[in-house]
Image (cartoon, rainbow, N blue to C red; front, side, top):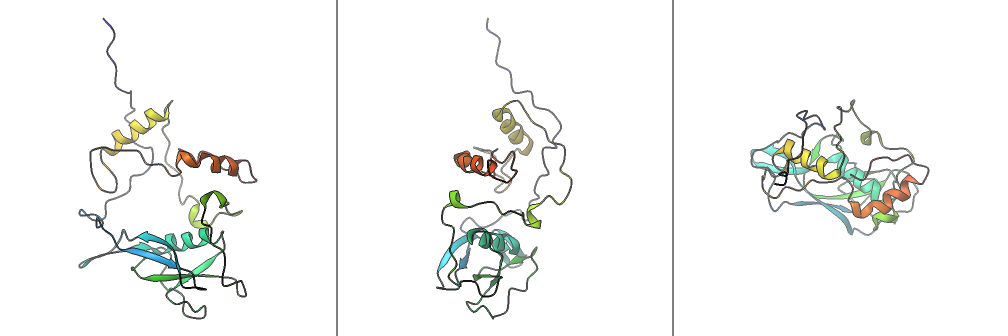
Length: 207
C-alpha cells in the first residue's frame, strides 16, 4: 500500500509580516470612483487609480492616499519630483493636504517641482523603460525593523503558508479561490534582472 500524501508542514509562527487591518466591514465599493492624474501642458489624463481609501463613514466616502498618487506622478514622469494641484496653472496653490492623508476624488494635475522645466514633460508609458531612482524616496524605505521572516524551501510552500495564515482575502474578505498576490509579477522578471545588473542593489524583488 502506497503511503498517503501528507499536507504541507506549515509552521505555527504567523510572523511573516504584519497583517493589514480592515477599516470598514463593508469594504470599498465594487464599482469605485476613479482619481485621475492630468498633464498640465495639454490637460489630458495619463493615469487613474480607484478610490479605495476611506474618507468618512457618514456619509460613506472613499478617496486616495495623497503620497501614493504623488508617487505615481513622479514615477510616470521618469522620477522627476513634483506636486499635485487641482489647477493646470503652475502658479496656482498646491494641494495642501498632508502627504499621509487621504484626498477626495477629483481631477488632479501633476506639476514638476523645478521651475523652468519643459511643461510638456514626457510620460513613461512602458514599465520596462522605467529605471529605479538613484536615491529612493524616504517613503519607500522601511519605517521600522521588519518582523522575523519565515521562508520555505519552495514558493508553493510559501504561498500555502500565507493562505493558511490569512484564511481570507485581505481586501474583500472572500474565502474562496484565494490566490497569493505578488508585488512584482513574474512576467516582469526581465526588468528586475536588468535593474539588478545596473548600479542599483536590488534583491528579492520578484516573489
